[in-house]
Length: 283
Image (cartoon, rainbow, N blue to C red; front, top):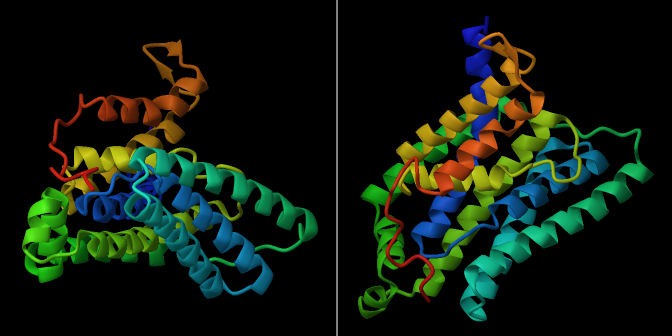
């Protein structure tokens, strides 16, 4: 029998990083920039918060490093797609590859040299509060502020936005900075939950966050619900490992793969046929 309180706590623990990353994807894609580089930004942030926190023994400096790493990766995505007009999918793949290779090298080097040190982290509840605040803030920003209207206008029709006097490139750069901030928080939270850093520790959560964003129709509150739904699925697979269904033993691999199977179904459009921003991917 699963303890409902424990299941709820696990859902929040596993869902909060998805909420932060999905909101980061929302700011990017609402501005018209496709972003499959969320995974790389989260991974870079997780590595940075661990390495800097371990070296300085200061959790705030670790968090600052996480934010800086994610913002730099997202600014690289902005430069590649806006200044050099590189395909946005290819640019996102490049961000993920850079982050995977760079963090693997850096993580192993730092662990080999200072294996006895541990990094301090901020309490995970701090990130939960920030995630809830980010949802409310972004929902208000998109609906009630001039900046939010500009963001939506650029993402829906960049050509008409130019005719109105807006600069889509400037809006997109600012949106990707916001993406970096949110993905940095997500990566730091993942590392805080784990207590250490290891290769590819984000384990596809950036893509799960992107799936939640699609299910949520690129809107903050439905995206929050989708992220918590994925968090619940992941929590269930942890609690159900080793249990039987209809008297038959279920392989552990089935439960482990369950969140990713749901993600694949969602990305195929079977769980939510929502229309993307009309200007997504347009120059």
